[in-house]
Amino acid sequence: MTPGGTILSCGDSIFITTNTFRHEKNILALVPNRLAGLDPLVIFYLHKGIDMARNPITRNGYNQLHKELENLKRFVRPQVIKAIEEARAHGDLNENAEYDAAKERQSFVEKKIQETEQKLANSEIIDNIKPSFDKVGFCSIVTLENLDHGGQVTYQIVGPDESDISSGKISITSPLGRALIGKQADEDVTVQAPGGTKKYTILKIA
Image (cartoon, rainbow, N blue to C red; front, side, top):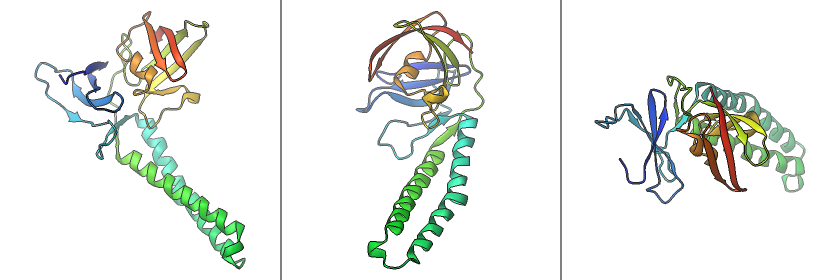
């Protein structure tokens, strides 16, 4: 085991985290549940600074990213190009606010396309995991009670490139995601979040 590593159970598979790098603790590897021989299935280097990073992602999350990329390439990009051509036809580009705005929009869209392509290239679809109802793992849906004010929230544990707190999806590498992994129902969880310490009780795992 890597010094400082932690095993995160995920049904038939496990994640190993490590804090041996200077960056924040991230998932390092996905291996089968055969730890006796440490026979790795595949290595996913997810800490910052590694070009060949592979991030876990659900099938739905991957499909959504791919859909967003197709929309950017097939519809948004052509619209921006058309806007630039129309603005250029208006005359002097030195004092053409429409042209400047269209060029800025083009820069934003091209950057978004590049970022989305990189996310897809660096993703590893995890769709063969059988969610455990006993312990929290990747893809688990967890209902929590906030011990500070008594409110309840439900989150699904997903990959970092598909997390969306407004949709109830949190990253497995987030403070709360890391704190929940491997925990069981009725266990208390303490999270050191940017806004301060938060405490939860796990009510249900699905």
